[in-house]
Length: 292
Length: 346
Image 1 (spheres, rainbow over the protein chains, first blue to last red):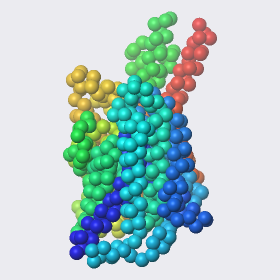
Image 2 (image 1 turned 120 degrees about the vertical axis):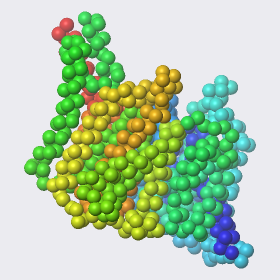
Image 3 (image 1 turned 90 degrees about the vertical axis):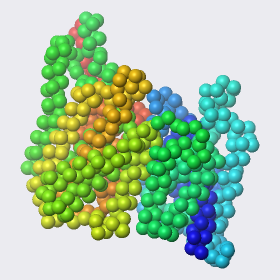
């Protein structure tokens, strides 16, 4: 029975992890930008959701959508600012990594300065009352709500990529930016939009993340970034659909580890990340092997 | 005149070479080499003398030791990042391993602290050897993978299940071997050693190979440079320095928790200090650590978030606009002044 419980919980968390990581993969896929501030964007989404709930009594589920427009705009502007230096760099991937590491430090510091260093949480009752019973087990209701919200959000990203004109252009750039430019795609503009969308989906998951990770605090960014990296590396970098598989594998592995090896479960994200990087750098679903 | 001017221009362009005055370089290669010897000698002797005498003028030895530890860490980051372009986010992992290995050598084997610190450095290099496959990864994957490795080391060493070996999350106490004078001396040795190592790497064939790899790994390997082996050497040296630094910290503080020696901000500090001073230079990390950590300890301890803000801004600004750091900036300024003076004289 415990095993079934862990698997169901793992699937619920896995959907959430997919939602949590997909923005990082989108941003990486387009211009090889390694967004080390990913976790901090989630954190800011969490604080936005907290403020909206306590000041305007807006449900966090609504905040998931509300945080998207301002973040797309912010992402678009940030991309325009960094595009020049990045394209001139000898190794843009490495430069973006250090750059966003600096951005992550700045964001964490600013949030601490303006909002304080305390962990904040939003009561579960803002989403749902009481537990949910499934196959004879009882689960916290918020798990189901968050997992339920993750499916359409991840689905929308995939629809955007595969069913819209902009998404097709985005995938063309992911495959080869030079050839994309050659067939008349405005690489700079589409990249900026995709960067904005990537950040927005990340802030959006932040709005409901406090229910799954026990609150929101300014220093949570680093660990969330590593977690998201583990998920997208498992699912294979640049493969958006793979993120869902990565999230599910990660979620179930983590819950099972917590059941059978509770004191070692905190090792899971790191060990999985290292193992995949070393033994199958292309990810579980990857076809091409990245040159090391 | 023309050829002389060209000679003088070379050091300015290849930024990692020692900066030389126009007037000096004119006297030919012999004096250039001598001058380089003198500069390298001063780079080691001046900081060592200053820090040896410092306790007579300034009583906060812990702060002085911390600065020396950070100089060593920044130089360690310099060796791996400055020479290979591989950024070790998880550098703190070796520091923590060094601190723990040193403490356990003292507690379990009753080794003298000085020897235990060397054991700490050796064990860190050993861990680096185990993590060697990470060097196969591309730069940005390497950075994240080392971060994961450091967190994994923390999760293992601080694990409650290992309480009988490492005390788990409950911390280490080596108060029985506390010696403020002794730990100060080893900190000065560590300081000198770290600067000396950078100079040695820079002047050796290894340094040449690493620079070639950084510029273009494919061409370097075609010219007979074994990319992986040379990178591994830099990686092991840099890990050993962090291990020694961790050992010195352990002996200085004597009571600490795993969270203190696996704190990711130690990596952040070391990287920022190296970037600020100038990676690939000898004195850059020294200047970065002394200036920024000094500043941090005066104003930053009570309100670290403001320093985090400043550090973040330094990373962004320096990476984008001042990639050669303060030392590079000064070098360019001196060269400009030099060529200005020469033009006026001519």
